[in-house]
Length: 40
Image 1 (cartoon, rainbow, N blue to C red):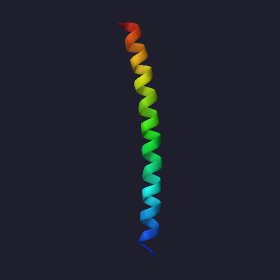
Image 2 (image 1 turned 90 degrees about the vertical axis):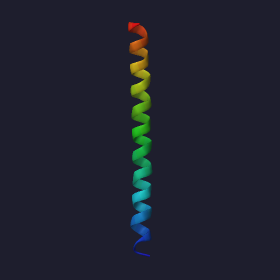
Image 3 (image 1 turned 120 degrees about the vertical axis):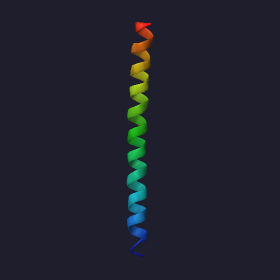
Image 4 (image 1 turned 90 degrees about the horizontal axis):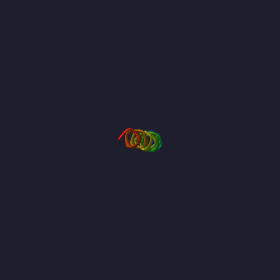
């Protein structure tokens, strides 16, 4: 029981972190693409 609680917490934390990273990367790619498109 003790090992299941931390594993669940770590999994949830990692999932939330991945979502944040994915969202940040998506915004970065969109901004970079828009700027690079305008330059070219």
